Image 1 (cartoon, rainbow, N blue to C red):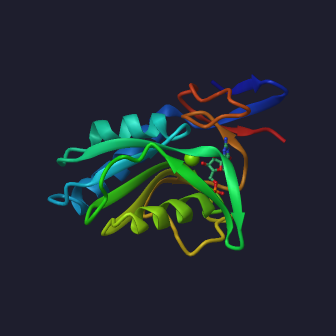
Image 2: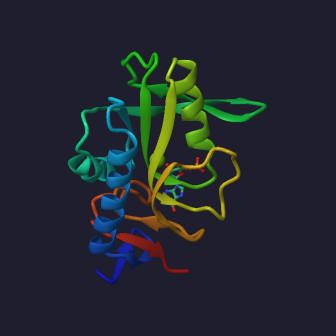
Length: 178
Ligand code: 5GP
Ligand code: MG
């Protein structure tokens, strides 16, 4: 795919489909080994994680369920930072093993908030599987348990991630050309 222009910006392929496929398989293998017999509930965080969740779940071979959640666009501010309201979670989490599926963990604030909300709803074990992780930017003690690819602190699009709503359908991961 090489270079792609989205709106006013140019992006370049960093991770081709073959590398993404390998990374997804690695995450699925680890989950299959760790959570066999635990009947986990996967929670796909929309919109960004839709593509990773689809590919990952095709390789998850243990009995499990998947559901889809989203954060409301409005947010309230507390001393701990921005707390966003979670919508679409109808499942009873009491005593469950929950695996949050994310597209990317950057500062870590989103997953920290989501892990906390799942625990408040009674989940016994909450884990995070993310396609991408920027360890250089992560400011929270909550780290992802399963990581597809560790990446530098650059802005990326594709494989579910967008630039102003565009680029989510690109099957590769592209980096902004500075
Ligand atoms: P965090 O709360 O970990 O800082 O941020 C997570 C969210 O920030 C992601 O779900 C995603 O929406 C957005 N984000 C962080 N880095 C990038 C990036 O490089 N590209 C895109 N498209 N979104 C990003
Ligand atoms: Mg996300």
